[in-house]
Image 1: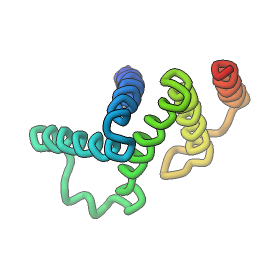
Image 2 (image 1 turned 180 degrees about the vertical axis):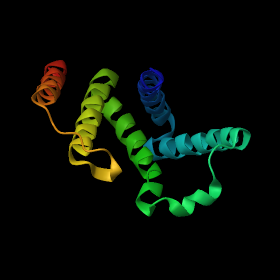
Image 3 (image 1 turned 120 degrees about the horizontal axis):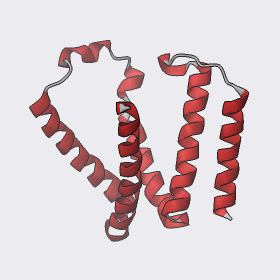
Image 4 (image 1 turned 90 degrees about the vertical axis):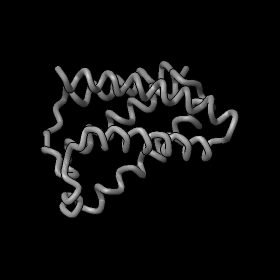
Length: 141
């Protein structure tokens, strides 16, 4: 249940972030917005970390380099989402984004990539993903 609530919160925040970032980029530009978003996020996360102190700093040595580059995706997400919102609007942009997220997660789990537990593809999942894709296409019309 806790995981579902965090997923709900994340989805709400992704949508709000995209809209806010698109509005900010109207005033200062896309890459300036992307930089500011990540600077503010870094300051907030560092402040929270310094108060909470979870995890172990020395454990960075155990993390494969590939996983340390995960923040790079955030840069691509912010810039791509604010650009998409400008081009096609918030609802359409988020609809495509969600299908891309689910499709990517589906492939990663089905292949067992990145140390995820390999989950076999079922017909029901394939039909569900196809229905979502069809829904996004219809939504775009």
